[in-house]
Figure 1: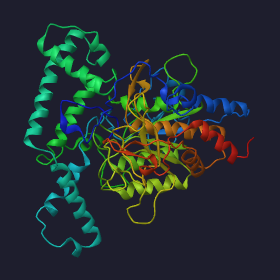
Figure 2 (figure 1 turned 135 degrees about the vertical axis):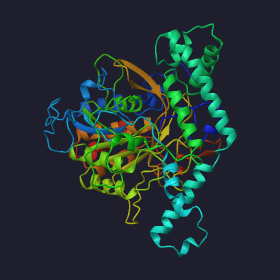
Figure 3 (figure 1 turned 135 degrees about the horizontal axis):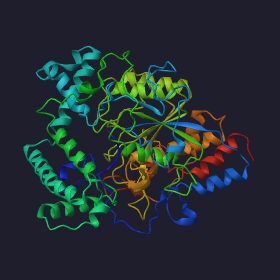
Figure 4 (figure 1 turned 60 degrees about the horizontal axis):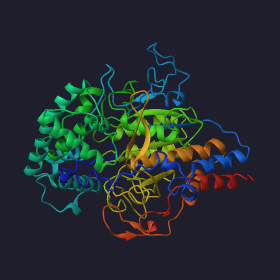
Length: 540
């Protein structure tokens, strides 16, 4: 599941899955607040300009670093991303041949693991809880024996079934379904009028604020959507995003009664249960749903100092898009192969802004983690947006191996921070965990690239915090290329700034120290990180 937050405030049942930032939006908050230095600006950013000034004083030159973004897709035509897209020089575009013999035809800028050979793509998908529940229902729904007497593998399967059963029946009442369906019908009715009167299929909140109408249904929907925008402190959310959010919520609410549609199987055509069947997908990286991946990519590496749009964090990167995350829950096989594809094609950092509550083929992802670790690749993963403690509640993929043989050491798990002027020092939606969340990073109202060629907008989520950390990791590797992934991870964590004041426990009004809800107790800082990297590398 993509870890972006959109709150549909008129539907209270969304509270667990899509929390919001409740603070009032202030025009005084700069678009690039997440990059600013607290001491000079008063905003709790990552001190990026100070980091660059320090690096330039050292007289260092950078070496290009490849960052893979496993996500929903990317706008390959965007003015701020075209200059930084990875180009597979071993492949000849358009000749319909696998020139580099890696199993993927015309993979120029990356690969789409949720596409079909006929050019079709998976756009929406079901939730893993529903897939697990209906797959195992016939085997375990009527089981009344003692689970402790089952074999270890069967006991684990039974426990997973019971967990899925609880997840999809919790809160899935008839009243909830009725409320969601009515909301969807109302929005679709007014939306159709707005699209016609605006003469555009997709519009955002900013467009609505300038739009006038005499149509009653359109007026009502305009008011509702503007309210959603205010609840999220943004005018960049689009009508299609909101309608997709409602459709997903309806699928989730109805999961206990209706087996999930096999969206992926209808399109991809591989043998999903066979891990060795790996030559599937296509090279379409736009694929109808590139908002999330485009936004995350821009945070990491949008072309700097080019006079347009935004500046990414790292100044000498290439972005590889590996499409594996639909509107819904990703499949373990796709994530495992996405990681392997990125590693095999030279990525040094992999940014992973997705997560889910179940991982039925976790061993495949674990093996991919081990593979990345062995190749010296740093993984950066979003902690999730359910304001829950992931020390005790799952947000897959997790570093702990399912076979009990240790955990991945080359991964940073990132919670979302904000700013006292921008929603609070901790984002109200962010997951947390003293053992499982390593650091916090800016993830509230982050301004970055969005699809449209020359379009930009804000989004919030641990999805945005994750690429902030991936960008800092890439920056360190550019200027200190001899450092290992393990060293870079330690530098980012040990250089994090530890707040002296208490922060809000996400989702509550309780106050705690950040060290109570994360391993380092710190918020990442690029300036402190490059200074530490310089010292470790034997610099001045």
